[in-house]
Image (cartoon, rainbow, N blue to C red):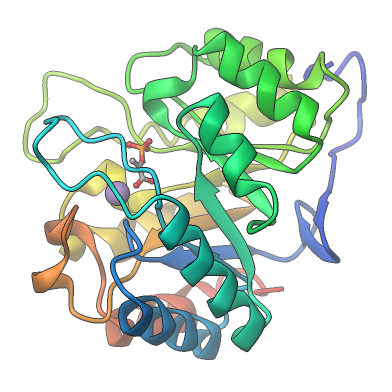
Length: 263
Ligand code: PEP
Ligand code: MN
């Protein structure tokens, strides 16, 4: 279902009228984690002003250490909904379990499956059954074939609204958090009709590399970006080093709008 033999022309995923795929870029932005009302509102207003159509924010955070901040869970979902009610931004959030899917359904517009759950087949089936659009990140060690098979799990439940997201893979290089596999963009587009976006933030791991990687992603043919933006990156409870300030995100948007129109 994910392959070009099933559908030769590129798919457009429509999230309440906001289209991912097609000529214009879809921009998703917001903090790694929802931390407080003031934090998410400030982030939402800023990314909306700069041109984003989606607000991202994690309520369920899959952290490397069990002692690190794990997210506000349902409280975080309520804050995301409040941000949607004020700004009209579409809400995307990561779900890490079947319980998280159930809890999130009334609050969000699109689910994110994170790199760590790309082969959690039960969870993939669950978001497939939900019929909400799904952003499916590539795992840090999944091949393109495995990644497309993960999309197939979602689609086999009848949900064709899948957007793929390259977010960097693990290599021998340690200067960046992950190595952004930009070749995945044209390679996947050659194999699949699904839209492909890029997450430069988790690839770079450092804010100063996010803008050049974003430009490269758009030049390579990505249909959009998902970027971490925090009103005060230094104070972030997760992924502090890679989050952009609203001001830097604004320069990113004006930079990339020279390469392709933003929706
Ligand atoms: C995130 O989006 O905050 C995240 C945890 O990303 P990834 O699953 O790509 O590591
Ligand atoms: Mn993050």
